[in-house]
Image 1 (cartoon, rainbow, N blue to C red):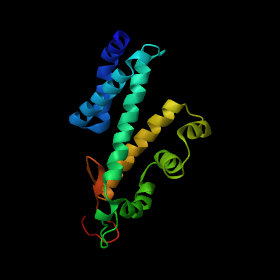
Image 2 (cartoon, rainbow, N blue to C red; image 1 turned 120 degrees about the horizontal axis):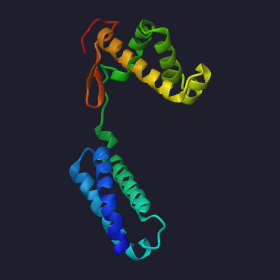
Image 3 (cartoon, rainbow, N blue to C red; image 1 turned 180 degrees about the vertical axis):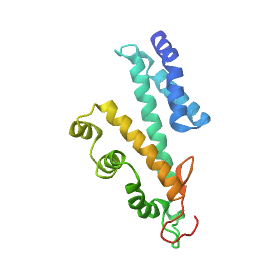
Image 4 (spheres, helix red, strand yellow; image 1 turned 120 degrees about the vertical axis):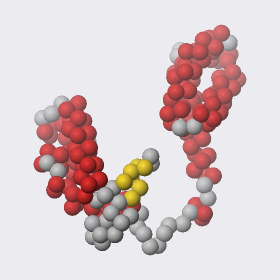
Length: 177
């Protein structure tokens, strides 16, 4: 029991912080922490025999978090959801804008966006192809994405909310959101 409490006291702040980041919900994070602690307590005799009890706590926490996500997915009744017939989803509409704004990026920015984001080339593959280091590739891709966001914001009037893209002005029809 002593080894469990020692491992718990070392891991608890890290586990809680990770759960808060994943759930964005203090109560849900606390619920999962309680479930993990109870599971650890029920296995306290075997816990002390583990090579790395802290790693076991992290694994159990991750598994409980995944279980909670699965429960949420199964709890949503798909028949209650309906798609609007009149307006295409934002991301579908955005596909029409993207080809029009890509040429407005610099050649380097357009190339890395097209290769890594659109054509599925991995960053390590791109780095090797362009004879760049992986950190340089990641930095270049980040800068290119920032430039693309600026162009999308100005040209397509993209607006963002906390969840991501929420609406934009379609270039084809000139209509607002």
